[in-house]
Length: 290
Ligand code: DGL
Image 1 (spheres, rainbow, N blue to C red):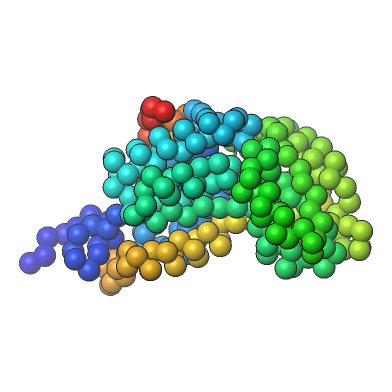
Image 2 (cartoon, protein in one colour):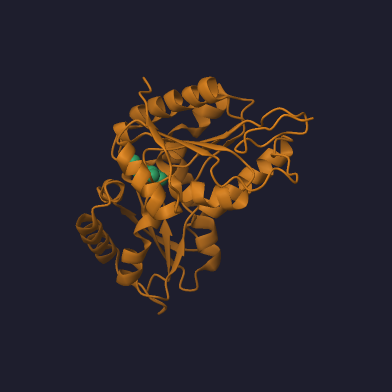
């Protein structure tokens, strides 16, 4: 008779427990990507690391972001034996994904970037607002992306210092004030030819301010974020590496299959997972040396 296996472990065709997918962000923002990943890949296990003790990334220099990205990836590879990595942070993707891919050539690594291409394809007014961190907007990766699309469209770029931090701490007053200030500075939103009809949320924290932003820019403006495309790309890459978790009759969607770690406050990540993913999770705090 087969011995019972823990219900939180997906099983590969070999009968061995499948490796987890590592996901990290500077804090709770990556939960917006994890949400899409769990919807797209319900049979996978995830290990989420919030580097809240070293956040925000978006207002720090590249050396800090690259060093932290390496430290977290090393931790996920050596301690959790991850089979793939999702960099659920636009700032870390822009600064570090190339270096990470060089250091881990056999590890599938998926990053996230502001959804400029889909925005350019969708916009009717060809005027698009982009909210992101200073680090993302100043990066070479972003500049190259922008350059490739600039002929078709005008992008209004808005660095949003303090907004990720306000979202991290669920500070409603600061979120409201920052969103009002930044959308006001960007110009007019709407469907008229001289208005921005599309708003790119180029930081994984910002989808959690969507209601506030919606009240400010109006119902007709399209919001674009990168969670769902990243989840689809993760599926494609896992399939190409023959690493998708096997699905069988005992391997039901893994409702409690994610592990949560933070280098900052466990309470903040616990509450964010509850609020945004409707998950009651046990969060462990850890130190990851740079
Ligand atoms: N969530 C991160 C991003 O997508 C940035 C937040 C921060 O500044 O730490 O860019």
